[in-house]
Length: 71
Image 1 (tube, rainbow, N blue to C red):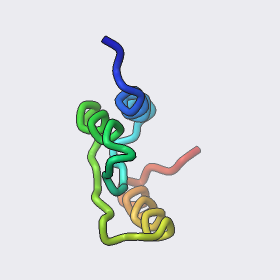
Image 2 (tube, rainbow, N blue to C red):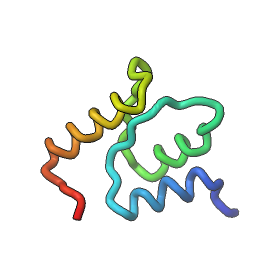
Image 3 (cartoon, rainbow, N blue to C red):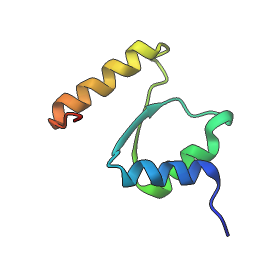
Image 4 (cartoon, rainbow, N blue to C red):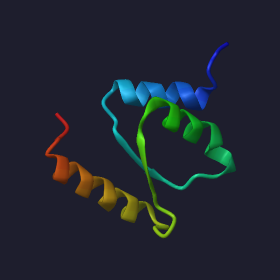
């Protein structure tokens, strides 16, 4: 049986080294969140954060804390 697209995307992200995803789960991305759990990616709920800038700042802080910089 073929995986749903959300699960395929999640597994691809995991294969590219993604370990943490920030976001807000909902009906529109439910399959993606199922795939995130299946792929073993950590999810950080950003329910209070309602602007893209706040999510970007959260991601930058995690990146700096892990000392992994994009090439």
